[in-house]
Image (tube, rainbow, N blue to C red; front, side):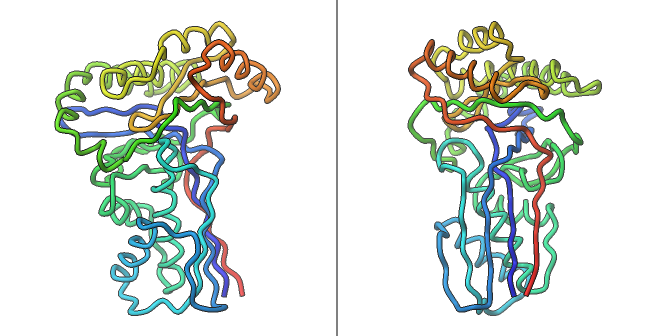
Length: 288
């Protein structure tokens, strides 16, 4: 037996905030992945962190599987603590793979509830772009397929503990103060969902989040990026990264060139790499 599950990470969120006290995020899945492989060639566990191990245990309990006599390996392209949904992708890939090894097909809705029982979760494993309550795992709105933006990812440095961030005593009040911007950003995500409107929504949400988790010179960097042909920016609202959004038809060479100019102008951010916005969801392959 061999089961392989791939779950994408993210470049932060397109929009995040709260409306009438209900927290939400709009997913920003990208083409970087966590891969979990399960085989019957021995009993071992490789690459699983504490949260991924907890996902395995809770999934076994959920599907009623008393034992797990398999080998499981986790590999990831996603750095932790940056806001790239590394933990969410790890937890989801382990849960989906573990359930499959037990003969159970775990839905995205079930995966979200399991993930949220461990920590606030990103919805990158849902098909398409979704607006979800990251605290409970509830999918609030399915937004469909978005244009495939090119995104230059920059890191502002350090790391953010997701659990500690969401336990901040002032977070609810700060989100409430930004509710008007959150509503305006969500309105921009209504049809027609042009790249320009989506980028404007992301930029509005990113700048509003400066009162919660500030990123140095973000407004100036966003304006400079637009001078270079970008459509806007997005951020990890509870992480360290930011994305500069380019139109889907933009060439990779152009993105790399402009990313270099941004890094030169703003040396406090480190250019990581360029990615593409994708549809979200996961893949699972089964074989002998």
